[in-house]
Image (cartoon, rainbow, N blue to C red):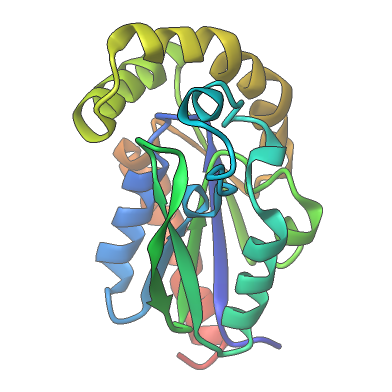
Length: 209
């Protein structure tokens, strides 16, 4: 039995995955939990000019370097250190810098499509889907992309209409059926978070942590 616990947290863009991850991080302990975001594993589009990069579909499963993500999860679960890519969301390229991540007792992997890939899904101990209403997700996405990624409202809405929403319906929402736990309202669902923490602690005890 592997001693390291891998938790996958999926859900649509703006659903509240990061807040759920943070709740686990805070409650289980920063000395035990490592959070890795699927967004770090977007493919590097540096070979395209900027206008072409902006036209890419970033909500399709093929937008991510899934082999590298899988390989890194296997390395971490084997007790090894990995160098997680860092992504520049304004230019849609990978930064030169990477982040060294060591194995930890609990690894939380969060992203819109992490339950889509069988090879990654099958090595998870707990699979979570954060289920949040579409209008709430859109509001959160607008706020994030304007404040953190310097994007215009028009570009956000155009992308949402052309790729985010259709890709959510085609690829993201169907992965709900693979989840062990569905969290309505995400990190604000105190009862569901408490149940999730109880399960994580039980696994920790079972594996001698």
